Amino acid sequence: MALTLDAFMAELRSDVDRFEQAYRARVVEKPDQYPVSLPDGQEGLWFEFFMDFVTNGNV
Image 1 (tube, one colour):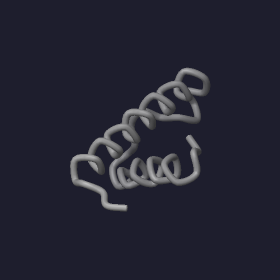
Image 2 (cartoon, one colour; image 1 turned 90 degrees about the vertical axis):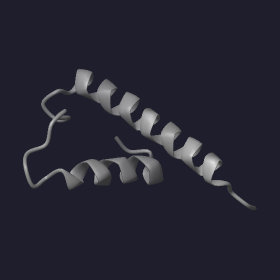
Image 3 (cartoon, rainbow, N blue to C red; image 1 turned 45 degrees about the horizontal axis):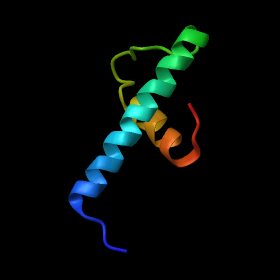
Image 4 (spheres, rainbow, N blue to C red; image 1 turned 90 degrees about the horizontal axis):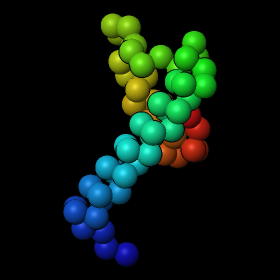
């Protein structure tokens, strides 16, 4: 099945928005376990968190 760039980008934006909403909900529930800022050198964890959310549904 063909996928246009526009459709791919729309899906990606949706995934990003869903991740943000889910993560922010966890911040409220467990602020000590869900930081909103990562220290220098650890920024790549955001991508890991996002990919785990997209592939496994984990936040």
